[in-house]
Length: 472
Image (cartoon, rainbow, N blue to C red; front, side, top):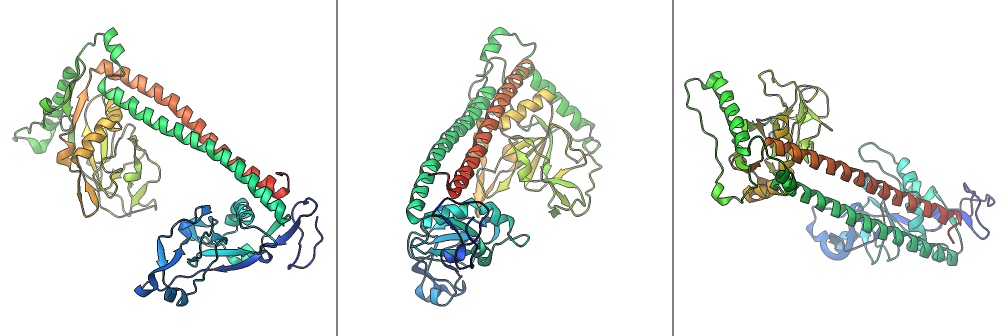
């Protein structure tokens, strides 16, 4: 180990360094500082020519164009400071703690960013950047605070760094760049495979709900009933449920909406069209009661619980007091939930089906619509595939309206959505094939995730070797 002297010079470190290297505290390798925020109530402080970066704009690479620029008056009227090109920046607060960047122009930052202008006789900016990247987890582990953890300049300055001569630093940084580029190429290839997997999944569902997937099955099998026969049974059940409601005695049965067949594409032999209204016996909106993570009242499903055709019971919220659901209003098998209002056109119309009963009486939020479906378990699984398919998505996109930045999907539109209904035997064949293919794809996705974790580990291993002196 290097000889321990004063804090202004070399210090002891946790491992033995090669000849010519030394340990030093970070406060000795450059000039440190932090930024500030001009008063947001003073318009003349903003809209100038000085790039002003916030911690969220630090993304472990050289800084790009800022979202905000400030004026010279804004700089002088705050604790913001001009930072020269080539400074290393690190986020100190919140979710971005430890994120890094290197300044590429004269700029300023807010107070959530610390900066170090390296002493060129001791350290290069990129060597310091990579070292801070290598100890990020260590810094985050020492972060103070609860909801907004933070690290301080004092904590940063007291860290120690192994310093080789400048020439060796340049060689180390060059080798890190080479190896990281190779890993990046591998990650790009993985991303392409993930994209291909997502495309394949959409194609699988489209083939399933259009009959392409089971064309060979139809050629080899004569179904015992048609899709129209299956629909007739569902409609009979629908009518029986309506007749069985005491509130409907003496009333005329409202016929469900039928599909406009003339405007719909052709279907395989034995299939027929139905509407969501024909396949459901009840519909309505959820509760607007305020919810929290406290397990005080009734569990409530929200938009995050509506995923890929089947509801998720993860991360539930709860009403402050239990809801009265003893009249059969609680969620049950066959309930279809659809996002009816949202600011994202990706989330609007997302749908999921309850295929297993929740462990306790559960309800849903008001920005979801519920349709209570009819049919056998196989029919419900068929609908779960359908609502996750490009065909259902196309119906959603044709039906949404937008207002004041919000997308909306009405119940009256959803009830008209056309649904292909195959014979029950073919539904069983479709479900079997799709689930088998999805299981194989899930194994492939797990392998991709493992490869992604491996690349992260590789980067850390490379950095560890670099700062031990083992890389070049």
